[in-house]
Image: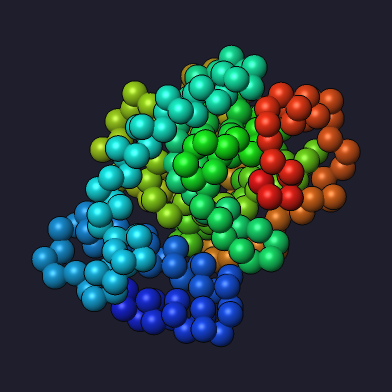
Length: 249
């Protein structure tokens, strides 16, 4: 198994060779392993972890994650209220959005009992709303932390979850015992089950496909223009807020 320092060297090499997708995948592996080392209280952290602090991804960020997300609850709730949707924020997580060109952008994913909201990393700009009922399934790889939200009548979203999210009013100590992606899937299933109904013993849940053969899930993404014509609900969602052009969401 590659060490943290080995992965850090691989990130730098991929960047020099302009292999941006490889660099992004390796960075996510490095982030996940670094956080595990930090939370385990390892006495001597590898050199790449200290270097990671200069990149903005080191232990200092891990300690402030929950606090940052807590502060964003009110801010994102106001944006949702302004978009004329009567929904309450239940879960937030910093994620990376992967586009078709291999570019990775920092985003904030916000969940309510009815929808997922894609914000910029600061929570200031709402970029897209996806009704939970529009999500058909999820493809995920727990090693890389990547997951794809399949939205059949629109287009898919390709994300990765490098760090743990925050559940409003929930027990985040329990969530920390799982991987960031596992915590995200649990929150999504809870919200989806609440929307789609079913019984407490047999809730209606999303189909989640665990992709173990590939860490990069790019080829599983249905791109824009392949998802059919948006329905009226989608067009209404896009017009209720000051959304960016969908090419940059």
